[in-house]
Image (cartoon, rainbow, N blue to C red; front, side, top):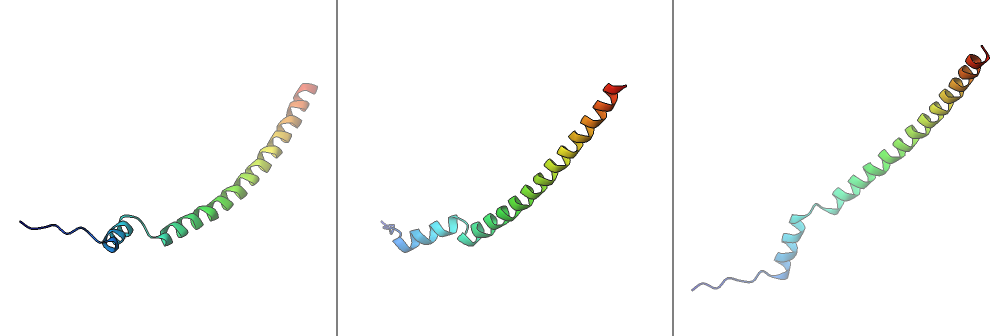
Length: 68
Protein backbone atom coordinates (compact mmCIF):
# COMPACT_ATOMS: atom_id res chain seq x y z
CA UNK A 1 0.00 0.00 0.00
CA UNK A 2 1.36 3.40 -1.02
CA UNK A 3 1.16 6.21 1.44
CA UNK A 4 0.06 9.54 0.05
CA UNK A 5 2.21 12.34 1.25
CA UNK A 6 0.57 15.29 2.88
CA UNK A 7 1.44 18.48 0.98
CA UNK A 8 3.85 20.72 2.79
CA UNK A 9 2.90 24.23 3.85
CA UNK A 10 5.09 25.59 1.05
CA UNK A 11 3.27 23.49 -1.55
CA UNK A 12 -0.09 24.62 -0.19
CA UNK A 13 1.09 28.24 -0.32
CA UNK A 14 2.27 27.85 -3.93
CA UNK A 15 -1.04 26.28 -4.95
CA UNK A 16 -2.91 29.13 -3.28
CA UNK A 17 -0.84 31.73 -5.15
CA UNK A 18 -1.47 30.06 -8.49
CA UNK A 19 -5.21 30.03 -7.78
CA UNK A 20 -5.48 33.80 -7.56
CA UNK A 21 -4.18 36.66 -9.69
CA UNK A 22 -1.05 38.37 -8.55
CA UNK A 23 -1.27 41.60 -6.54
CA UNK A 24 0.12 43.53 -9.51
CA UNK A 25 -3.05 42.65 -11.44
CA UNK A 26 -5.18 44.32 -8.77
CA UNK A 27 -2.90 47.35 -8.62
CA UNK A 28 -3.19 47.89 -12.37
CA UNK A 29 -6.93 47.16 -12.33
CA UNK A 30 -7.69 49.65 -9.56
CA UNK A 31 -5.39 52.26 -11.09
CA UNK A 32 -7.37 51.96 -14.32
CA UNK A 33 -10.67 52.26 -12.43
CA UNK A 34 -9.39 55.33 -10.58
CA UNK A 35 -8.29 57.02 -13.81
CA UNK A 36 -11.57 56.15 -15.50
CA UNK A 37 -13.54 57.48 -12.53
CA UNK A 38 -11.79 60.86 -12.83
CA UNK A 39 -12.69 61.02 -16.52
CA UNK A 40 -16.30 60.09 -15.85
CA UNK A 41 -16.58 62.76 -13.14
CA UNK A 42 -15.27 65.39 -15.58
CA UNK A 43 -17.71 64.28 -18.27
CA UNK A 44 -20.58 64.35 -15.77
CA UNK A 45 -19.70 67.89 -14.68
CA UNK A 46 -19.67 69.01 -18.33
CA UNK A 47 -23.03 67.35 -18.95
CA UNK A 48 -24.56 69.02 -15.90
CA UNK A 49 -23.34 72.40 -17.16
CA UNK A 50 -24.78 71.69 -20.59
CA UNK A 51 -28.15 70.63 -19.14
CA UNK A 52 -28.24 73.78 -16.99
CA UNK A 53 -27.64 75.93 -20.08
CA UNK A 54 -30.32 74.10 -22.04
CA UNK A 55 -32.83 74.49 -19.20
CA UNK A 56 -32.15 78.23 -19.16
CA UNK A 57 -32.69 78.45 -22.92
CA UNK A 58 -35.92 76.45 -22.67
CA UNK A 59 -37.17 78.67 -19.86
CA UNK A 60 -36.45 81.76 -21.96
CA UNK A 61 -38.29 80.25 -24.94
CA UNK A 62 -41.29 79.34 -22.76
CA UNK A 63 -41.42 82.90 -21.44
CA UNK A 64 -41.44 84.21 -25.03
CA UNK A 65 -44.27 81.82 -25.97
CA UNK A 66 -46.34 82.85 -22.95
CA UNK A 67 -46.01 86.51 -23.92
CA UNK A 68 -47.63 85.87 -27.29
